[in-house]
Amino acid sequence: MDLTEFDRLFDKENYKRHPWEISRKKVLFKLLSDSEIKFPIKRIVDIGGGDAYIINEVFKHKMADEYFTVDTAYSPEIIAQLKLNYGENEIHYVQNLTDYFIMFPAEENVLFLCMDVLEHLENEDEILQHLTHKNNFFLFAVPAFQTVFSQHDVLLGHYRRYNLQDLKKVLYHYQFQIKDNGYYFSSLLWVRWIECIFNKNKKASIDNWTGTTFKSKLLVAVLQLDFAFTQVVKKIGIKIYGLSCYCICKK
Image (cartoon, rainbow, N blue to C red):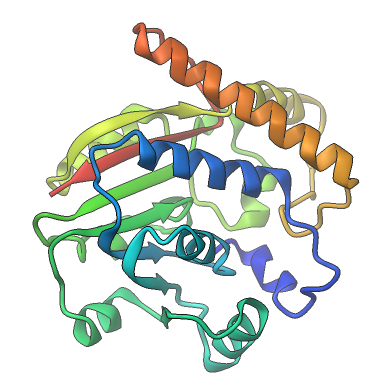
């Protein structure tokens, strides 16, 4: 989880979710709906689930029979607060992948989500070494382009950013079969380049969004148009770079 996500857990009533998070959720659903994965699937496991926003949104859409979220930050206190925030539902909270595979033996037809997690690890092996089971699907997403690495990344606890070739190289090393890949949020890439030039000490983060409801909805709409355009031109063989990149894989 991003380090800043701790701040929101105990302030549910006053917390405003960042437009980027809402837009990323919409990207996730679109990528999954366009994939070869047939839903509902047996199990969905969100690795690095943070404040459990994504897994709870997936749960609402009834995309699986079982739901799990895994994060090293899930102490008993954090889990209790998450259950209070989202209600007592059928989502399982697990502190690490080792415990997950011990308590819930691997099965086929499982989708593992790993969105904006690998960049937090000094070595991707900490997660990827566990994902060895066959006939499962995986969605990886990471922040793109080391050239825009900034104080913002340091604030979020990032070790690095990737380009698509970097991500694919890592995944091929661990024998993932890449079924789809690409970039998203191209408009934000330009914004980040400008920020890196003129605002190197940016301290804004996803946990301190103070924009109005109108501004939030406007930004979400812009990012969805951005993503839709990227997907359309991708179909005709034109690749547009973005602030994030993804791979959908199978083993």
